[in-house]
Length: 500
Image 1 (cartoon, rainbow, N blue to C red):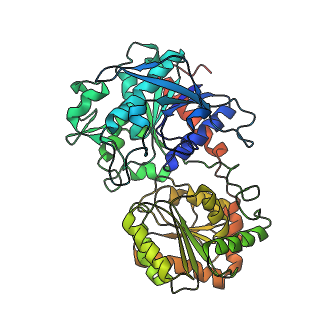
Image 2 (image 1 turned 30 degrees about the vertical axis):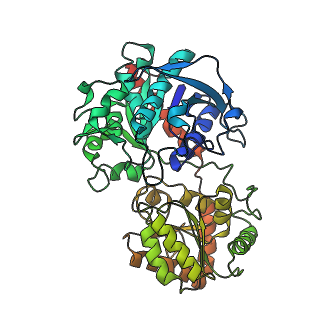
Image 3 (image 1 turned 120 degrees about the vertical axis):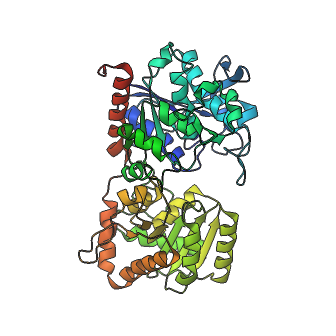
């Protein structure tokens, strides 16, 4: 099949979370299975991972119709990095970067940490319309357009409207929801900027309680919908987790699929990871102890292999339960354990954690910011991994942790419930520790449960590590689910069986 990915992020070029990881990984697995997969994303500025001179600037200028008049952009061509068994034998995955300096050559992807850019409606309308205009310019018609989150949600809308009667109108569309909490809401009076008329501003279109909602428009127009775990696909149809769009999702429930994200098993492999201190595997865990002691030294903590080390890697955000972690740590610092945290986000949470680390330098170390290499070293060196999210569409860190024999401590929600098996004291089986209620008290007692297991049932910890490291979270396991969904979408769009 010919598959076009339209997304605002793609690792390793630009990412803020799981969206970028998926867009940077899934296409390589699809290409390996014989598909012609191409990606369109913005050419951002100020990112060390996005060096403009590394990409070929294509001849000519791309003209993109917009509400305020046609916009002109250059196009640069790159490829997803190749490497590992997943992609070496596959054709390259082309990445087309839309170069529009006024809209994308900025310090941040979506806005500052405290405020979104005021012209995000124009910026990401341009992404969706520009991706389709590029297909026409290349004379390449995709079978399926795979749009990701609100930033690309207008692509299915444009396929059903401005592309009517043109070759691209025959393309099916799939809209993947990576996080329903972010919907792309704007002043409805700004709809003209998208190039669409007010006839689309209604309850089964782009209007949502008086606002212009790009994600809602995509939910109505896409041929099929998907999200990133089976449990989350059910949760978002409820008023509790539906973020105001649960009614739309219930109405389209027959077209909604929950497919777990995969991880890059070539990058996240403790037996071959060049970023960690010593290799190890499920059959030989000696190297994990060496990684732990190296992490303790790097963090300035007492180097003691017997002391359990609990880690956090991720955004300091309310969704991730950082407020609950902060309160629970006030009691946990008195336990015989160490804590290493890597992340950035809420300035208040960051200051609080920095103060806690200053007061308990023998117990807590905060690495503010984000460091991909350090994240690998933490996953390898920690014994337990904190992830008590309020909601978690899928999550990847709990998969990385299990791959590295680091047992996750999670709340049973979304993809966490789908990927972590709670510890059973009677059998010694499980791959992590779960809490049902999200509160400082519940998290405190769940961490103490994990620590007690460390001290009193160490053979169970070793058995759980080996069980966790045996799990397969690679895209090989999940790419076939997307293949099936692409075929179903094409067949519905065309009204005939897939020709391949």
